[in-house]
Amino acid sequence: MRRLLIPVVGVVLVVVVGSACGSSTGSSSSKTSATSSSSSTQAGGTAAADRTLAQQINLQAGDFPPGWQSQPATPSGSGNAGTRQLLSCIGASPSLATTTTSVDAAEFSQSQSPAELSANSNVGFAATVAQAAGSFRALSSPKATSCVQSLLASALKAQNIPGLGPFRVSSAPVAVPSGDQGLAFTGTSSANIQGQSLPIQFQTALVVRGRAEITLLTGGVGCTFPASLQQSLLSAMTSRANQEPA
Image 1 (cartoon, rainbow, N blue to C red):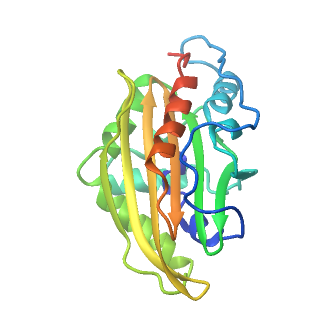
Image 2 (cartoon, rainbow, N blue to C red):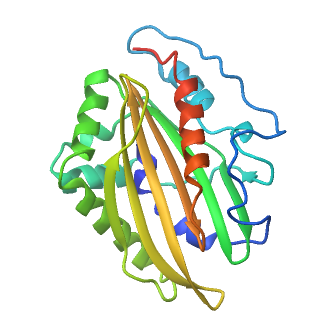
């Protein structure tokens, strides 16, 4: 769940000219989709096998409707430091953030200046099922929402974004396949972008399946990310996790 604290700053700052915002609500495109097959590993797995499976589970170009662009993931350079900081704020052990591998998907966007839709994902594997469950319990605690809000607000403030409004975060369960655990943090704010005061909205959906920790980050500046597309993306990722090793 390392990408939980990759701040929505990227959504705010990457505002570029592109196709119309909010026009896509479908779940398929003419782009080539990644294979949905997965390789299995022995219990406990290896970092190499986990990485291969994480790459297969992550967002793929074929998950998006026409009009979406992609670019390689931007390395954060901070590893899982943000998640460790969050766990410490919650009062949980930072060691719960440790993974055998953590893989970022490409960064996908659809934009029409100054509005922007953005989506990316991260898949990591905890060393054990118990560790993944413990991490999810911590993030589901009553204190987690206030910690997420505090840390993300600080990260946004540090970017000196013009006209940044109050930042608010809420959390709610996410509908996921039976046996999985799901939770989403939704954040809202506003900023002065290209001379306009535009709303900012993002959602980080977390799904735990066995050792797999799946994170989908969607956001919108000047428009709201389509709920139908968001659910479609999450469903595509969870369906590719069907052979996640125990």
